[in-house]
Image (tube, rainbow, N blue to C red; front, side):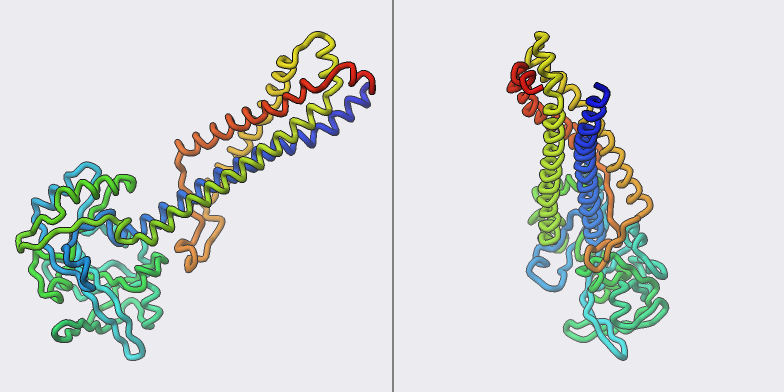
Length: 404
């Protein structure tokens, strides 16, 4: 009798272990997948928004021209935009296309001039050498911040002086001092943007002090971008500034559709991973429960001979299986969240920034989404386990006793 019990434990224990770990590993992978994708999308979005805000208000003619066309903003208009619910900050900017030239190389760039109203948080966070230029709207500092890739290409360093040439009706030359080097790993921006003061770019464009290339609107929540863009379109689109020029409102999604379409496609990969992991977890759990039921045919036969119904016996096995699911979910939560926290704060897994735009695997927690994921996995697992319990109804006490 004891030998039989020991044999049953020896057979069923691997099945139980595999079932529990199947749930745990599946949930762990799902948690990590969601956190990594959310983190990746957030990092890329923040970098793109750091270069242009969530919404841009520009001259309508700038849409059809390679060079930015001037547009004026009154203090009243900027105040109205900033007072809009959901708006975090408003800042003006001015651009000018030019060329940096050294004795050995040259490079076409876009000078982006900003003033005292510029939110330097993003740029300061990505400075790798030196400092930011003195952003001034009243006088020129002749200081610039270049990207690391541009510095490497032109063989320049912090403290070097470089000539810039600007082409219009006549060629203009300026000599700038490099005071800082930034790096965001976004090649589309790093390779061409040079930051300087807004006074310099306004003078290079021969614009008035209240004329800019546009205004950038930074929002508190990225998810409000479409709604606020629609509101600003209704309020400002095709209205005119003091010089009779039409305003045009564009969201960051419209300005860089390729980047945000690519980010949306990443969601498809997550859905596939979640589906595969859930199927794998359910398969191991159902297989484990079937093995346990088949091992307990004697127990089922005895229970039925004592008057127990199929429903009562199914509930016993379902209760046992639910405990295993809960154990697997708890283990998966500990593993998934534990690994996610380790990666978030210690950056254990590194990436090639030239390929992935970031140098470490990003992690972002969305607790409502994770709660939904865990609860949904738990409910689906328990409901799925009802199916194999119907095997109990096919076990007949007389047949079992005949082979004993």
